[in-house]
Image 1 (cartoon, rainbow, N blue to C red):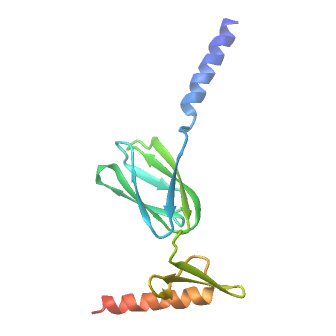
Image 2: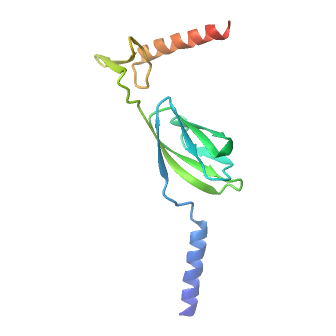
Image 3: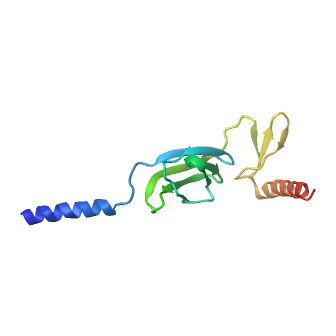
Length: 150
């Protein structure tokens, strides 16, 4: 019987040592195309983002992380120390802005987003119709290109 108890105890010790980091992950809410600041635990050396098309992060001095919403959805973010041990895990949820100045216009199945503050202008959002999105984004890119060439 003593052998079985020792074996069971040894198994539990080994199993718990091999188990991944299991602290409850904190949820971080980020708005699409906006940034938020996250204070990380001490001694963070590396961050890992599960899906960088949903969120992006930039590690700053003093344990600050700037998290930017890139696409709608959920992903995870891991904070690792120099040895690769997990110090913290976060769930990052990216949602649409809740802005009273935004207006969504539907033309049949085609969708356009406008920002009306104080007058209405094109405001490209994920989910807008391809033609509207590409035309508006193309204008923004062309304008930025002209500004860079001056």
